[in-house]
Image 1 (cartoon, rainbow over the protein chains, first blue to last red):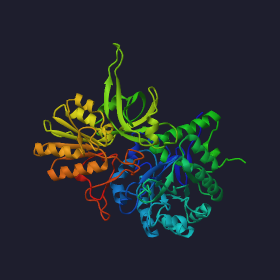
Image 2: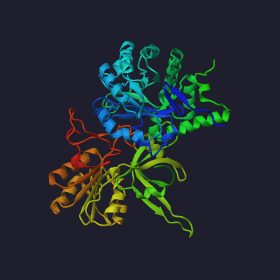
Image 3: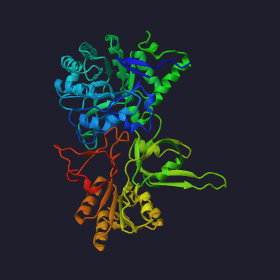
Image 4: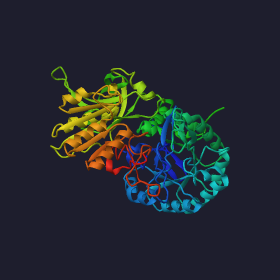
Length: 304
Length: 273
């Protein structure tokens, strides 16, 4: 018998718990020849801003053991071009598209939330308060509970759609951040964004990235992400979406046990563009082999 | 397209440079010169990210037995520079690789009959062999191959076999002209009063010099760039280069992986880069 794989994030129903992470899957279309988008739960678009953003100088990425550092700087087409050029594709796919977005002031966040709220093809919103690679905005909101709450309050007032807040791990106490966002009206929390890191070119005595620091992702960060998901999931009532170094179905299931209701696959899609689909299929297979009838029975089912 | 490829041959063609032949699906035969593939060196997490390689050649192996089906193949030419390429060089026949491709925008061939000037530096020759193979069908082709030493000038015999006239230059004078390959290119352009088109791939300094030559002499010049990339399909935005009009106020970043790797040199910003 096929196990039940569907989960709910706020009012959003997913056919399975596997999404793709913002910034690793373009606007969906780029991957459509490699992945059956209708075999994954949802996909999250590259972070959107009101105006187009050019991003940082190069080098922007570098591989590190078991991971990669990126300092793209939130390059994106801006909301107008998104509506014009990217939304038509979203309409053609029978899978929820979640729009990730960021601003520089609470008002900007609210304006974006309200414009995205008006797009029927956008199933839910993910607020980025945690990008480590832009100087102003983003991270400031992501490291102070009061600032985070003000952004989330502003967005909450601007949309009725499911509102997900993506948290930064670059804080002393992620639980405090999670509770502030939940209190301000978040429907769900994505945990975690990348960890700030650095790589050095010894012979040239220079940082490898033009931005000096970048966000670390990939399997190297999985233990930290698992710990943070576990901490947050115990402290809030809203669903948690686990993110961080998920490469396989077993990685994803570990996050579910730690308390995640769903997961996002990020860097793995670069390595294998079909990763999200293969992980979703692998999770179902794991349940079949163990006679587990419903994925939801595993959420937070960590023992001991 | 994502596919598994079985290595048919992996040999060092010059110290530090390797040529690998592997099986490929028939669609790979449609690869355009200048396109590339992303190779996953092994299934582990270190190295994690795929490595991009220009398509050196594609072709079909004719079976020895009647009734057997021909096998399309793909070749890459690579230099061992780090962990990923180092591991690649240790692989043997029958080992399996995971490949994405063909990716990116390749070269435009240009009008038939016109002289085609191909400029390659070191392992930059990798995407130029398939190009030469295409161009010799309808045009006279000349290759200008440069490198630090004779060991860095690769596969000249293969180009000669196509009927390409080859010029070489090395910085230490161990093969061909002593000095930079761009000098030899300029000599040819002087002799023909700047006729023809230029196609170049190699280190950034060489491409910059070739772009300047093309601009000064009004010779159409296409260059194939390298970039640090994670995905190869326009999603990570890691590999961008700057368009000619790029400035901090009006940024113009282009994806090397999808809008390139081949660009018209005049479309890109060279000064300061």
